Image (tube, rainbow, N blue to C red; front, side, top):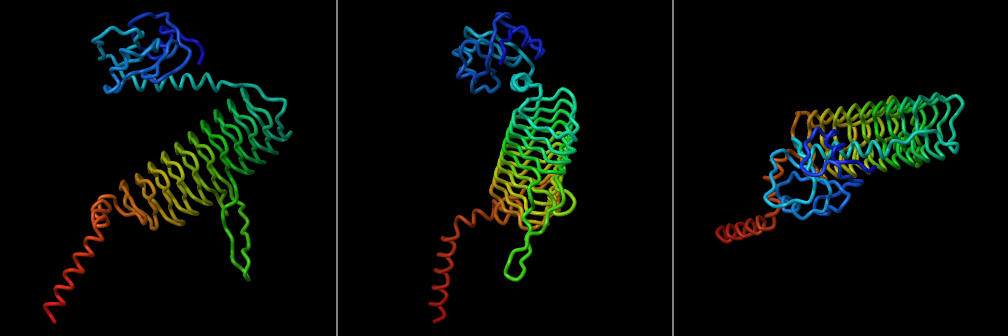
Length: 344
């Protein structure tokens, strides 16, 4: 982080200063780990005691915070400290990633069309007829295949591989190691052999999508695998051929969606969720961690849990019986023996 003063930070956050407006910081810290030259924040009342011992040079606090002991840190008061610190993190991130220029060590096809104000890192390859928009940042060792399109203001981190014919929208972020457009897993058994079915579709990623590290999004057999606007992926997610993920849905790490399944809008999939192929998941569905979905969900805004999963309230009631199953069997055995004795 560049060196910045309390006065400058207060202007960015529209806050007021209590303390030295000229004190400067050059890095961020947790309040309990604050050292001289760092900036931190306090929003959770459970951490209030740390503000009296922290060595952070600047601390962001809520407007309604009033100290009861002396404080060495300069305070910047804002309406919501946590949101203000998040805004500062974004400001810091923009500065950190504010790279520009095209490396002499990259390879760009003569038929590719590239925009303005780009960053293209070392050993990146851009194929024939690819189109790169304005203000795009492509980090080292990225592969962009023939005919692929990258929209304006998109950032592609190191080692991403985008196969041919794929479309990436505007304002997207694709993290390191992700592969977009690899073949879908389609084989046809024939005479004791598995005949590979050619995958000639593509992947479409709409605007404002973020894809975590080391994800794999397969191209469609025919047509497109589609990730709609505003979707956010965690790391290590597999999306199979012809899947569609609806707008503004969230998917956490290690989740797998099998081929041709359609996920609705505003859905939330927790970690290690598995969904089999050719299903439809209704808008607003929430699926708890490690759940397995084996049939379509048609009613909107419900929560599911378990494997195979069912509605979460029913699952919780059933779980009581799962836990006591051995005791229930013992009671049944006892009752059966008593009945047999009476009837004998």
